Image 1 (cartoon, protein in one colour):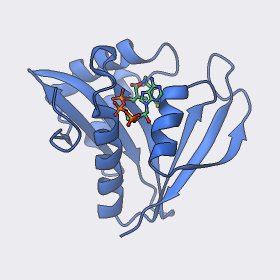
Image 2 (cartoon, protein in one colour; image 1 turned 135 degrees about the vertical axis):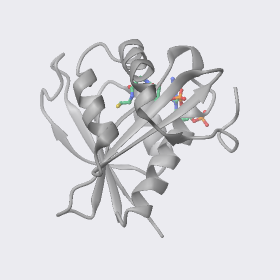
Image 3 (cartoon, rainbow, N blue to C red; image 1 turned 120 degrees about the vertical axis):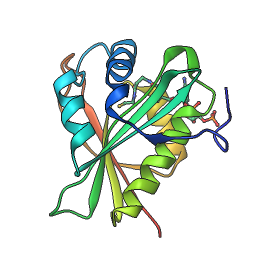
Image 4 (tube, rainbow, N blue to C red; image 1 turned 180 degrees about the horizontal axis):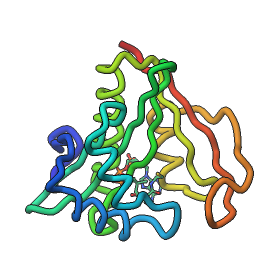
Length: 154
Ligand SMILES: CC(C)(COP(=O)(O)OP(=O)(O)OC[C@H]1O[C@@H](n2cnc3c(N)ncnc32)[C@H](O)[C@@H]1OP(=O)(O)O)[C@@H](O)C(=O)NCCC(=O)NCCS
């Protein structure tokens, strides 16, 4: 697999839908995006959906949402195929998501992460995200969400 510097992240397209749903099923037990939600995000001007494709399969995805009334972008989801973890794809997707947010004029990125998700928390903290709050019992499994944010420098 490629390393982050050479990992190509591209915008998702409609033809990726089945692969995106299969990846979602491999990566999340609950709180999954539905096929319908994916279809909406693929068409939406208020969403950026990026993917890493390798050997014809989608290995990772990231979804950023924008709101017209807020300079903060929201990283809604980031997921890497279990078979492709630890190879820099998550980092490449996060950085691509931040580039996409900057290109849209966002000045910060916010996200929520399950309090027990050590891998994702390490990824975000490595990239300068700071925890600024907690939402109790936010997820379907009853776990708390930690709220993280970082400024996006130009
Ligand atoms: C979180 C996730 C996206 C990381 O993807 P990845 O491609 O394995 O991550 P990378 O290889 O790019 O690692 C980048 C950094 O993340 C951190 N990290 C990743 N996996 C880690 C782990 N298992 N333990 C500790 N730190 C980890 C490290 O800081 C790592 O940097 P380093 O290799 O220099 O130490 C992946 O584990 C995943 O898809 N998890 C399931 C879905 C999920 O929980 N998404 C986040 C919430 S929406």
